[in-house]
Amino acid sequence: MSSESTGGSGGGSGAGPSDSPMLLLGALDAEVEAFKEHIDGAKETGWREYRFLEGAIRGQAVIVSRCGVGKSLSAMLTQHLIDRYTPSAIIFTGVAGALNPELEIGDTVVARTCMQYDLDARALGFELGEVPYTSYRILEGDPDLVERALTCKPSAGSVHAGHVLTGDSFVVTSKDDSHRYLREDLGGDAVEMEGASVGLVATVNDIPFVVIRTISDKADTSASINFAKFVKKASRNAWEFVDHLLP
Ligand code: ADE
Image (cartoon, rainbow, N blue to C red; front, side, top):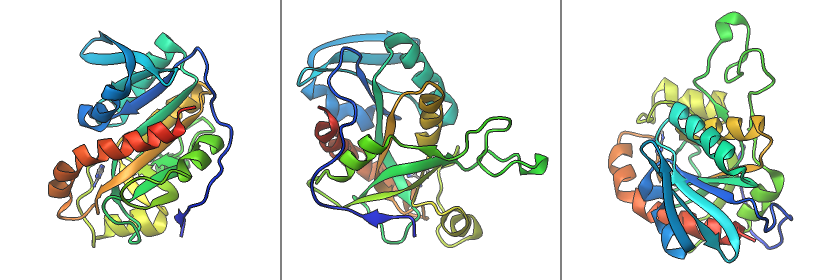
């Protein structure tokens, strides 16, 4: 079992206030919407079809943006924002499908680790998720940010540490082999479509990151309906984590 419930107080030092902004990312506008009302001196700017909100929350410079769905766009936008703003840390929030049967809709998984589970060059002798000819496979969230996120007490749901699997599919099966494979063989607690690609870019750039995912569905045949219903609520939940993590 890779998931553990947590509670208590404390937390590490993490990224402190600095001139360089913290990057607050989500895949969809709806996932970062709730942050916007808390930003002082918000100024909108952009690149291509993306809009970025620059401002500060309690004196900490922040950039808020959606990065689009899937591994390619999320990686692309993360690198663009790193080049543009040199962020001190990246907080990625949004929703995920549960793989761990202990997780309920509304619970939150803080990724200690994440992996691109559909990056598969096993035919060439690489491990599943391994980026060929690199040392990257399991991406580790920044320990301070992870531990601090785990001390958050959101108004809804419980908080778990876990292993998040990222791939370019919206997973809608619960009882079949692919679901069993993600849970039992790969040890995934939750599945989503951007965390590890953002984590990979952050890692290559040596920028601390954390992926925080609220469970919107159980990656089963009701997943599409539950996802649509839950995504707005998740944004409020994400704000509570961001509020908790900002210095
Ligand atoms: N994000 C939220 N639910 C998901 C699911 N079931 N599969 C992939 N990504 C998701």
